Amino acid sequence: MIILIIQEKMTLFYRMLACFIAVTNVPLSIIEEWSFQQLFLLWNPNINFPGRRGIRNLVIKEYKAERERLYDYFRLDPNLKVQMAYVLLS
Image (tube, rainbow, N blue to C red; front, top):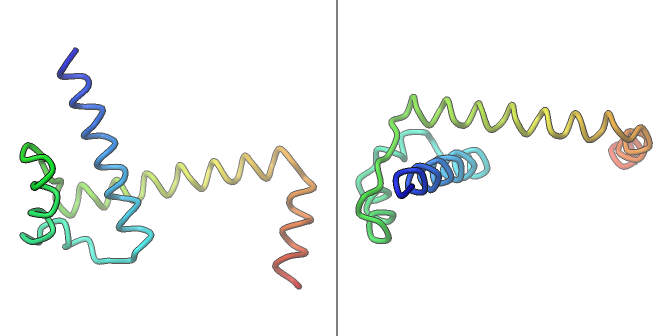
């Protein structure tokens, strides 16, 4: 049970880290930066940081999931497409 909770927290940490990188446009190499890691290690000394490849895959996975969520959202309500087009063209 404790291992599952720890794994869920790490998964959430990795997802939030991927979102941070995607939103702020910082390079993936920030994950391997000593000072960046120390910031998180102050809160939890047991954190395992993914490498650049691992975080890259997470960023892509999160992007695709969000894209699908938005696609489904607009597909379900055709009026939103019209409203969004109006806002973009205004």
